[in-house]
Length: 91
Length: 163
Image 1 (tube, each protein chain N blue to C red):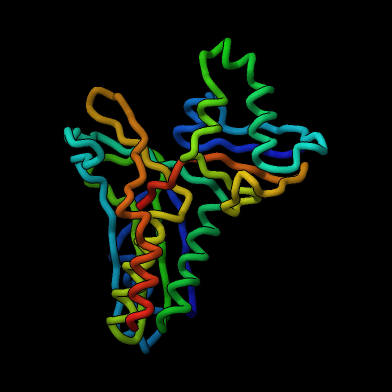
Image 2: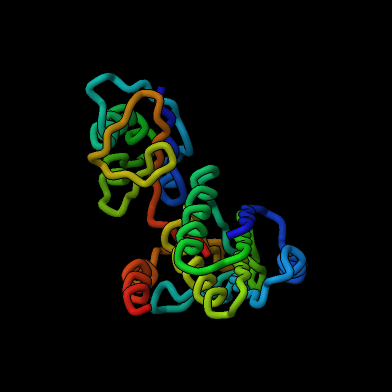
């Protein structure tokens, strides 16, 4: 099981802060995971009027794999922790 | 670097207590540079300035601490530093409250000043924190990242070449 985290504006738009997802073997990159998540949440889009596709495919979205900044082309495996978030604004 | 203190906390901090603790660490400290960030009333996000009544700060537990450790380590590789303290608050913060503290001690001021600025520049662009500002109507919006902030890597790379 992979653990997926959503932070800040992305968490709010999706109405979810974290979830566990079983990764099929062909889902081995962040991009493939994004496609899987969009598909898995199709029902939520209708029910809560969200748009997982619009939120996660936005070019401003950043990703971290096991708490290290990664790319959408980065490889992932089923035990990974993956997080999606907007550009950081601390300080 | 002899010691590094990183704290992400809801509660406020005392600049004086932090400085006193750093001063007590070693007898060869000649310079202690500190920076304190505060919640500002005016939001300079949009052209129409909006009054901010509070900020909400969120972080990524685990990753944020790693980000700060890396930034401190990068500073340590560039300047002869003694100790570094980085404190960042999270949760709901009101106008004029303290958000962030960076303290850097060194034998001489140049290293302490430069490293303090370096740490803040990278904290703003690389550490996993997000701010949401709330105005008096309770309409909150997530603060957008500034482009001027994201140019810091280039700025410090150029500065390094000149040294």
